[in-house]
Each structure stands twice: as structure tokens, then as C-alpha cells.
Image 1 (cartoon, one colour):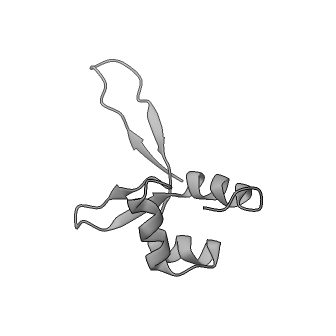
Image 2: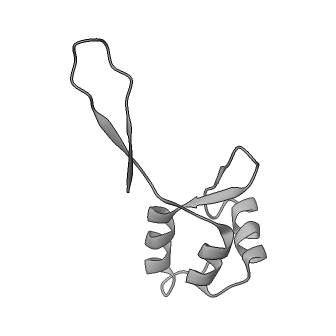
Length: 77
């Protein structure tokens, strides 16, 4: 897990916030045993949230994906 120092006024202790690890569409597809294009369609439909890299590539929150993965038997995406 990565941490990033937060901006702080002079004289105050440094605080770090946790950054959620991100997964590629291919990594998400492997976890769900689907094609990466299916993952892209889920994102386009709003079923899973996504962030974009500076280059425009999709990335997915590992924490969100893992929680969805645990819910798959009860509810299909």
C-alpha cells in the first residue's frame, strides 16, 4: 500500500493518507473470469467505478473490486 504525504502548514506534524491500490481492466477480468471488454462495459454502464490515468487508461479500485467479487454469487454484475 502506498502513502502520500499531505500538505501541511509549517510546524505541524506530517500526516499520510492511504492510496487504494488500482487494478487494470485485465486484472479485474482475471478475477471475475471474464473478458477485459466486459469489464469496460461494466464501467460504461456504471456498475463499477473507474478512474483514468493521465494517459486516459481505466483503473479500478482494488478494494471495490474485492468487495464486489465477494458479492458475485448473490448478485451478478
